[in-house]
Length: 162
Image 1 (cartoon, helix red, strand yellow):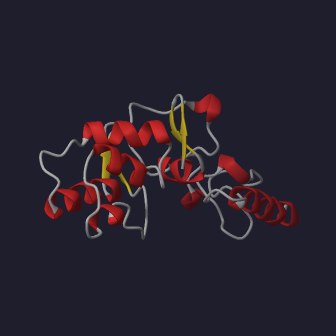
Image 2 (tube, rainbow, N blue to C red; image 1 turned 180 degrees about the horizontal axis):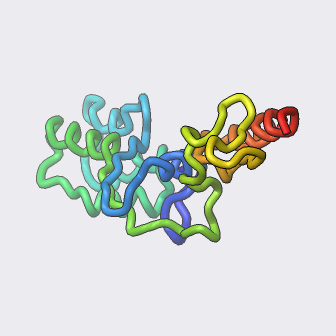
């Protein structure tokens, strides 16, 4: 996940955006499999906003860590309160304001319904001799080259059948 001046980005966020609908909230685990605030639970550890920010800086950029502590300010520094702050790090609920739009899209959803095509030839079931391949078909792959693979494979199928 990348934290940019415009919001969140990076492969994880781009992948998640394929499933997100405007107005829906999402939950992000900012530190999977880590106990970020463990240093504050050690015997005789300092427990204050500065110590919490230092611990959170291990997983978040410094300014975000500092802001995180301010936004999730603890009334007391008990184990229960620290556990609640830890939970917030692993269950960050947010509602995106939107996306960067079609101009910045890596992958789009939608297109010709696969039910309208012969799966082996990619030929239209309604218009003989008309073939659809690649991203014009409603097939959305994960990031990492899957859409390229789909484009090439569907193109080969259509080309061999035409």
